[in-house]
Image 1 (spheres, rainbow, N blue to C red):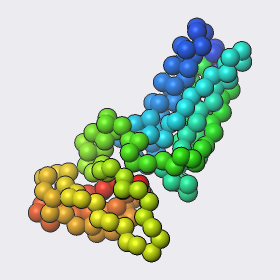
Image 2: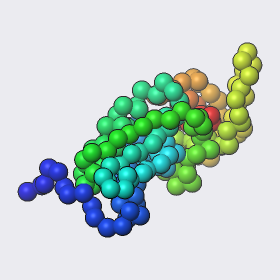
Image 3: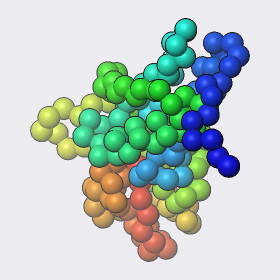
Length: 178
């Protein structure tokens, strides 16, 4: 039988933070299902209040209007409850703004394995009125060719663009550098 509310984990404060962070870090991004929120760089901080054991998780959205944030919040709370932290809170911070530079090497590798081209280094903000620069040499994740073209600035989600390889003719997604 599954205990619906496990007891709060005991041990040192450092152990509690590590356990809570591990639970939150394992949450999978709902739009990029091959990476966790930690690998994507959305997970910013995990704190456990001494005395009460209340957990506060801090996250930053990939962009301020990201529709997945409520799902991520709900999934974090469920993961923490399952790990023994039923009275947790998730706070969202917008500054500093998330950057694709925050994606971990493991996250980049998982994206590439799933056929989603991970972004290169972010080039900084684009001044208003100027076109965004094309990312340098977007390689096809299937054949490796750099003879590729952008088909649509928007893919399945606003953070991805749709590209096609002109060599093998396969379409693929590119995670935009922000």
